Image (cartoon, rainbow, N blue to C red; front, top):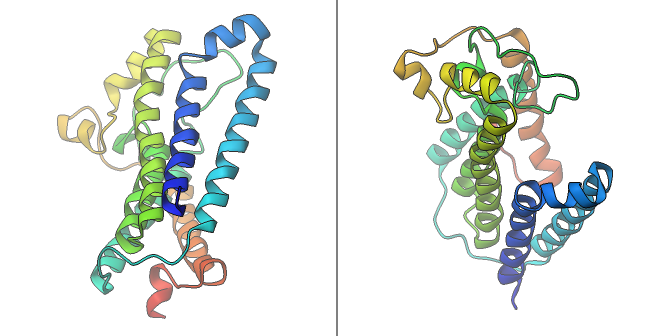
Length: 230
């Protein structure tokens, strides 16, 4: 098994075990061993498979890019990452999809800001990260890693909807009626209005984008974002 095949195997293990443990295997494990034991098993499996993926990725030798990347591609990817950063920061506060240890309340009265764009802003942020990194770093190992992130995010978001519908039918279906899985679909359908972004959505997203793209140079050895042109 060569380096790229090892990355593929590790990525399949990481994504596959996540879906298995999060959905079909969760209920029987919790029923037999309890929630605490399940969380330990889940965390250990996630840590092992993620570690394997990281080691396999770093062990890949020299690769030839599958296409040439120019300034136009870098500029488009940088803009996509800025959008992803705003979605990610906006998803951290007031997100009904995040775990709630208390009794779930009613869905927000209206979808605003990042939630008007999509009810899964965090997941779409990760997916956009994957797309932009495929565009500017077209190596086989990186494409495998990025596709794994995209699948984990977008399939995970769809499965999360199904789980929430089963656990919180009235609350979640009310939220689904105001939002959309696909970005901007609810706005296009008239169920939500674009706008209402909070200060931390925009300012936090810009700061995250600037810091993360700057960090590419010391961590990865190449400049990203606006730093490529400064």
